[in-house]
Each structure stands twice: as structure tokens, then as C-alpha cells.
Image 1 (cartoon, rainbow, N blue to C red):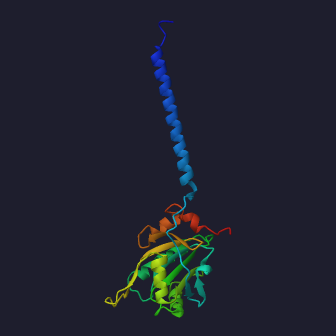
Image 2: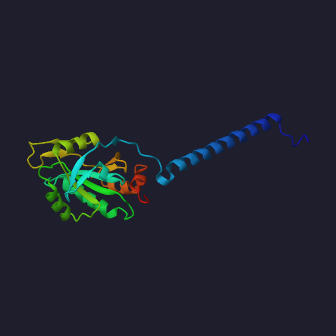
Length: 219
């Protein structure tokens, strides 16, 4: 009827508008679905920062600790020396807190490697570990200086150097924790002295950390 009719152009415009709106809505839903698949469940893989080379260290128990001995379980690694008066006690305190907060179900190990191996022989590390009440999944290792420093620089891509002019702290080293997966690959590092560093590790940041820390739980 003439009074209720709608011009044909308006109908076409309205239909086109509905189609556009529907397409935009579907595109939005698709993006949300992709985002959900990408970010839910902490399944985004971390990059491989480096493949650790073969190495042979001595654990505080006197047992050999090499790459094969660490295989099959993830690890959080730091670098210290027992007569360090500055950052090392703070690093070890953060590692101790991490030891307390790691779930019992986690197979992850903690590993503190001395960058002052001439002084930090296994018996020295054993006393140091005892003083911090370190449990069995927290390892302390020493070895030969050249080999350890090469491992730090070439394997972990971190800094270490002698500072003989500083008699109170003759070695300068990184304050980072390194995340190593069960295949001996470094996947992330954390500035350990930042206030939220442990929260980020345990919360699975960056994406993929939790998946690596939980590797081997059911293996």
C-alpha cells in the first residue's frame, strides 16, 4: 500500500547494513576465539634462547653434574659465589623463597652455580647450602673457572668478568635467573631482584613458563 511502502533503495541500504553488521560481528567472534585459543591454558611456546653446550660440574655432594644428569626435568639456574658480599645473598634468598613456593608436584630443580670455583669447592658449597637449609631439589655446583665462565657466557648468554680492583667483590656476574627446559635449552631469563620476579615465574609469565615448569610431572 502507498502509505506503508518503503523505497527500494532504502531496503537495499538496510540489507547491506545488516550484512556488514553481521560480518563484523562474525569477525569479532572469530578474533575472540583465536585469542582464547592462543592465551588460554598458557600454551604459547616460549622461544629457544640458546641450546646449552655439554658441561661437567661437581655438585656439593661430590657427584658429577652434567647436561645429561639435568635432562628430563626443568630447572631455574642462577650464578653466585659464597664470599660475595653484595647481590649473592639476595639472589640466594630469592632462590630460597622460590624453593618454598614451588608446588610439591613440580619436578623443577633449582641450580646455583659458583663463578668462584677455586674458593667454592664442594665442601664449601655444602656448608653454604646447609646454612640456607636447601632441600634436595636445590643443587649447588662448582667446577673449573674457564669451563664455568664459558658456560655462563656461551650457554646462558649472561655476563661474568673479573673485577680485581674491587677487593670486596672480585667477580661481576649477572643477577638473572634462567629457565632451562627438560631438553637443556634456555627459554627465558628473569631479573631476580625485581620485586615481582618470583610472582611472574610462578604465574607463568611470560606465556609458556608454567608449561615448562610443569614438564615431566606425569613423565
